Each structure stands twice: as structure tokens, then as C-alpha cells.
Image 1 (tube, helix red, strand yellow):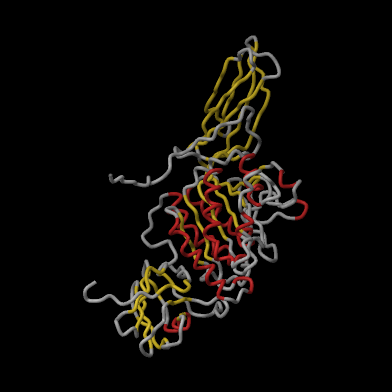
Image 2 (tube, rainbow, N blue to C red):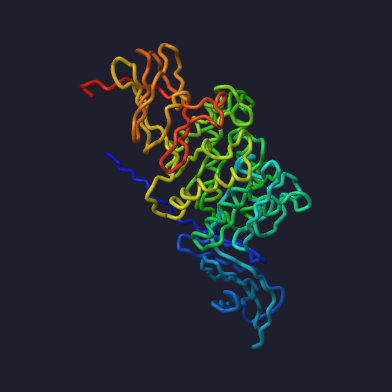
Length: 474
């Protein structure tokens, strides 16, 4: 019996189950669902007698909805109303009606509805900049909740506010989303005219195994995962997260991993395990955006850093909803961390990608980093190698210096090709079994690299097997 399995274009939207006692607070952000609306819940138990309760929703000063409910013996109530996503602030009034008289008990102001995203990873996801340069953009439409602070007491600060790239010191990093987080949020707001909430849970100097969920206590705020999950739960945004943006791996270039081996060996397994936890806790995630880190980041010089980047390049093969972006072409570059201008460039690279996969925007040009599809000898003589990319690429003759073979049986002497093809001419027949592009311990920012016609640098690759030439019978 043959069973045909077809993956749906997207998962059905899962609604969050509100808590028994829930109400809006000032400055709260509501995530819109797949119908473009957020749901505001008002639930609880009255402490005084009443005939009924009411909930009024205002857009600005205009009353747009009123919900009422008769009060039964339990004194419990459960009201809800819908918020349309857009650049508008809402406010609510909640009250009781008794013997024909109305009394307003509570108000909440400055409520907005839009799209929520997570940024996670290590220091280049924190994106503070070494000099703590604060992004100048401020907007009531770009928000965040709580703090990424590792301080156990501060980690449970339940506060809403307008997002900043850096907010340290006595501000306890409240509403901090990093430099490229602010730049990306700014562009999304300007393009799509909806508020954006970004929760950044990154922690510098961490390996991927340190980002795993504590299964015994998922909201354990002594863990990176737990601090983020607690914030999303308190913000009522667990079911509103549209995507995760991930920049991590610098601390997995060596052999200090939890398994006692090189970080690249188990990197994909750890990411798959972590993303499975994300999908459980944030069930409406539609896309993962990951970065291939800078070659030899933070001083790594061994081939293990190249192998780590190869695992990142190949990771989307395990997912149907993942895109990987290069950092190789960001200027100014990032030997370890990036300058403010570099982080801004990182956001500009991501913006068209997020537009495509999170907003369904069409693009006349590719929005991805060029990626290698295949490497093969051009003929049975094995004196030429053909590289095929997934899109057209551009390069200069100096690019030949970026390639390395796994043996020295024949030197690379010339480069050619056009469109999606690069050909490497060898001095004679070669017995090489694999090809690499860009060695982290040798490459420098000023060195020539491969570019896409979209001005995005191609992903690096490491030890890719060279296939034999096709025979006439193939």
C-alpha cells in the first residue's frame, strides 16, 4: 500500500487558551493571528456584587466595541474583544452595572496589535556593540517585554515598553532587543504599517547546548531557554511568535562542548532538539532565520570553525521552513562583534528575507545568500572542477585563493565560468576528494569572495565531496 504524504503549506493557527484571571495592562502588545487580529481577554472573579460586567474597546478616542456579560452566582466573568493590527493605539474600560448604574473599575491604555518575533543566540544576537552604541530609532510601534538579564531576580521583571538596542546599568536591560533588532523592526514597521514586538533572549559567550530547555522546569530562569519562555508566557505571546531569528555558533567552534568533542559534531542535533522545544512552546512559528557566522570568529583558527559553518549551511536541509543568511559580506565586518554599521547591514540583509517568508512578499531578485548545490569533476581526466550554485554569482579572478582541496596532487591555476557556474582549472589530474571555500584561520575581510547579483555574499562551505565526472552514459 502506498501512502502519499504531502506537507501542508503552513500549519493551522493554534489559539492560546487564556488563563482564568487575565486582563490587559498599560502598553501591552497583542500579536495578530492568521486573520490579522489579536484577541484581548478580560477574565476573573468580581469582589463585589453586580448585575453584569462590561468591556469597552476604544481605538484612539472612538468606541469600537462593547461586550457585556450577566453575572451568575460564581461571580466569574469571561469577556473578549478583537483588535485589528495596525498603527493605532487602543484602550479599554472594564466595569460593572448594578441597579441600572455603571461603574468603571479598571482601565488599560496604549495597547497595540501587530507581529511578534524572537531573537536568540549569543553576543551577535544581543548586538550591543562593543562601545554600547544605542540605535537612535524610537517608536511607540516597536515594543518589547521584560529583560534578558541573567540576574535571577531581575529576570522576572514583568514590564512593557518601547524597545531599545541597549538599556543597561540601572535600567536592567529592560526592553533591550539589540542593534540589528531595532533596525529590522524599524524597516518592518515602515513597510507593513503594523506594530512589531521583538523579544531578545540572547546571552553572549554561550554554546548551543546551553540553549536547551530544562525539561524538569521549562521556565527555569537560571537557563537561557527558561528566561525567554517565562517572558513570552507573561507577555501572553507564546502563540503569537511568527519567527525566530538565530545568530549563534562562535562558542561552538572549539572542543569545549558538553559532549567533550568539537562543537560542530553535535550542532545540528542540538538545534533540532531546541527548535522542537520552540515549536511546542511557540506553536505558531512559521519560519526560522539563521546566520552562518563570520569565518574564524573571535579568533578561531582551526578547521573546526569551518566545519561548524558547514553544519550551519546544511541545517536548512533538515527543515522545510528555514533560511540561512551569510555574514561574510557584511561591511564593516565582524572579527568577533560588529560595529553599529555592521549590525545595521545585517538587518538590511535579513529584511527582504523576512518580507518573503513572514509576509509573503514577492521579489524580482533572489533574497537569499548564494548556496553551493554541487561540486564535480568536469571530465574523466579530473583536471577541472565545476561548482554549481543555486543562483547567479559574481566573482573576480582572485577568488581562486579562497578554494582549497584536501590533497596537493594538483594545484588550482585558473578560475572561469558564468551565471550559476564557477570552474576551477587544475595544473594536472587531481586525486582530491573534497573542496572547501574560505578558511576561517586564513581569510581576511579585504580578501575576494563570491557574491550574488543581489549583493549578498555566498555561504562558505567546507570539505564538500567532489563527485566524479558524468559519463556519456549518465
